Image (cartoon, rainbow, N blue to C red; front, side):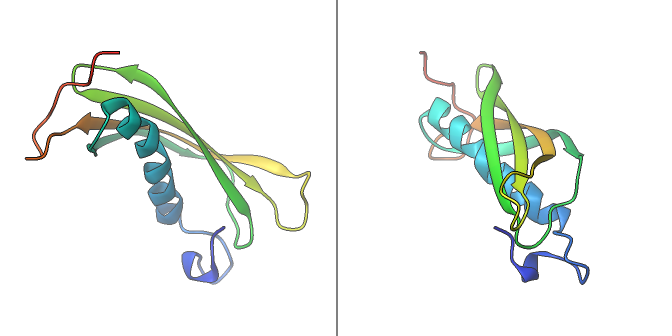
Length: 114
């Protein structure tokens, strides 16, 4: 749930806050697939469809859409449940991130075979 410090004077949440939270959400399935450390190497797409307001309950849903030798691409959908209107849920953002698995020396590392 975004706080007043995450918004401008009109109560609109900063896009950077949403981007940060989406990056965190997308990194979870990427790190699970890599069985360890990943780093963000690209934000392939980011579309803001509707604003997010202070007081909205924001949910992030992430799924892997592609894997490579060392990379994982994750699609994220973001929904906001509007304050005091539980039946009003709006898709506010969608994004695609690419991560690279890295080893302890922060060099690219092959994804584990599944």
